[in-house]
Image 1 (cartoon, rainbow, N blue to C red):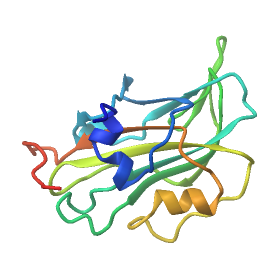
Image 2: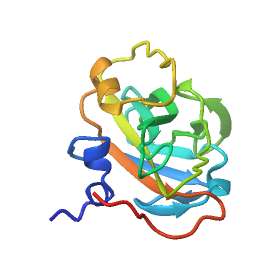
Image 3: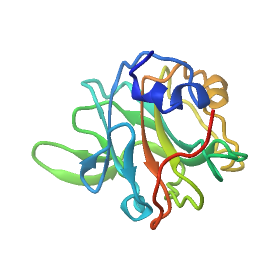
Length: 190
């Protein structure tokens, strides 16, 4: 049995096929790094996170997708996958981050946004049950025009990757979120 949190959390299976992690992805809300399966409340994720992709070659570009596979509820995910954020052309760098992907140098901090926000960040607001919110990172082989889907519900990460020839993901991380005053754990049976 796998001990990979993406497998245990059914991210691999529900959203992604198995893949080999080959990039370093950090997602930070309020300067706290997400770990797989973190429990966050809507108030903690109201603003877009800072996203960091470590590397040394700014010619390498990435696409970031954020989805909720449990919309509108984990027991009846009829809107699986709900698209919360889509950003393309994010350069790899030890000094680049998105939140909106601000560029930091050792000497100067500027608010130059890098990357191309295709679908703006929509903060998670689950109304029923505990939802998984998944960040999926793809390495782009080329810079290309990506069109915003006409809707957010029923986005499909696998189909999106195939449409734009992105290949398998290179990294992913997810957190759990329920309504602000919610309590308890997952209650659905597989």
